[in-house]
Length: 229
Ligand SMILES: Nc1ncnc2c1ncn2[C@@H]1O[C@H](COP(=O)(O)OP(=O)(O)O)[C@@H](O)[C@H]1O
Ligand SMILES: [Mg+2]
Image (cartoon, rainbow, N blue to C red):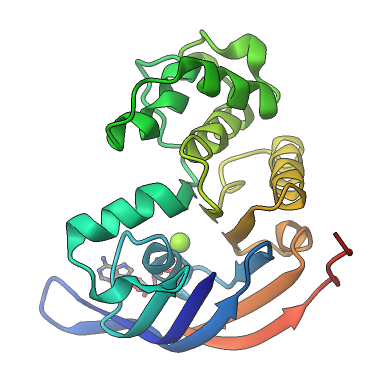
């Protein structure tokens, strides 16, 4: 599903000096895997996830998503691929504060030009355990609830792949645990999940761990064999 081939990413600092955030990163992730990318702050995790999520392109190397080389696509085609294939969950939830939970969940469908589908948005809120919060404004929800709304929003276009960048980073441990259980159950439902964290405890939910250090893959380990379907 995901094929990263010798990816590197170099940024220009304000003063023009280059910073290499990723170098020669190669791995493949099959459909249905639950993978964590773990590393210290500044190791390049977000840089990598942004490429996998079609938010950014590599400086060199190739990225194929579902067999398609997205690293060579122009911006508009890449965002089209992104809206169909990727659900993205951020550390800081990124909900619209003046919109209700159900309006937030609906949004990705509107971006693709689809008709509003409030029934589907409600169903997804039910899926994440928040049916009774549908009409609450984002600002009225706890952090854990906001993140579950953000996960429902990421599922709106029914993408095969869910990417999450430190999704529990702003949550207390109980809320973080419930968000990780939700990812686990989505994985069991067949989604491919790639989750970035610096946290060993969070990483323990995944079946496979790619450890990244100073922009390089330091190890790639199976934590748990996949249970037979
Ligand atoms: N837009 C950017 N411009 C310049 N440097 C950046 C930019 N984004 C990230 N970096 C640098 O790239 C390295 C990796 O950053 P990042 O991918 O955010 O790591 P992580 O998510 O693991 O904390 C860091 O040294 C960071 O300062
Ligand atoms: Mg980061």
